[in-house]
Length: 177
Image (cartoon, rainbow, N blue to C red; front, top):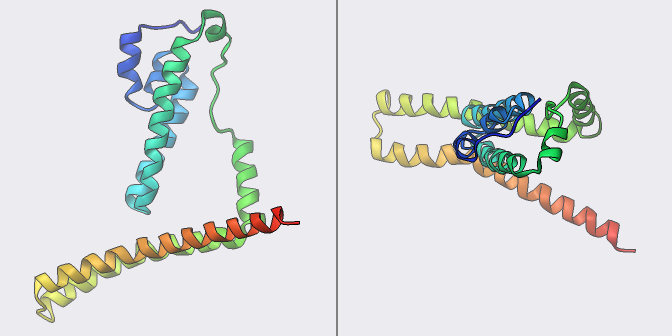
């Protein structure tokens, strides 16, 4: 049986996503939150930096979820079952949706992510080649490098904006008689 814990220690554990839930005895929930947080940060750092922003959302969720759990009355607290946040059947359903109904959108997102990674690597090589072989000024190359690094982000931003307009347009058509 899970027991309620010290509010002081709960606060400090809640500063790490998932650790507060684990401290309160909800190990499966804590591990789920911790893994999701780490995965978002890793993917955001390595592949697509704007994705790291969602790590903040997970952090806030974990922080407030921990304090909400600890502030529940005893009977409600003891009634909560510890379970993983995401189950394998939910992942299978997500896979079916992404590869079935939204196959083209999924393909475009994957192509853009791949393009972003390749562009970053090609950009590094071109800057090295331009500076050492062609002897182009470092100041000029810094400016060119900055603009070229922003290109994949800007393309992603334009795609997201266009997708938003598309969704709004379709919703308006749905609402108009």
